[in-house]
Image (cartoon, rainbow, N blue to C red; front, top):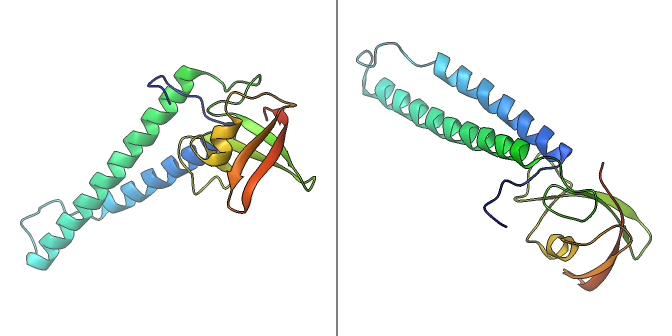
Length: 153
């Protein structure tokens, strides 16, 4: 993808916002357990303090990463509803006539099971296409086709 800020889907935004809230709560809980005076206690206590500081540092890094990503998504604006791109929500119809809705994103999000990454076989096949198009991609069971029913929420 380009270095430009990329939009995210509403579902991806909700997942990131929930992860951010969870991380902040975890960070606050960990920070509350730190002692005011690092010179107190034995070496085991000091080692535990250092471990918690390391955990807090990793939490801070992820909090910053999510905050920046959300800010970039705001700068990018809403995802396109004309053609599939980053952040698009796409309803698909498979050969067996089942439909599913997926979000196109940068990385798979554990909190968003409908996320399809833009660089996966399906994601890359969908990019740039519009509602009504049929695309072919390499699935685990071989080449398959899917029709784009609609774009947007």
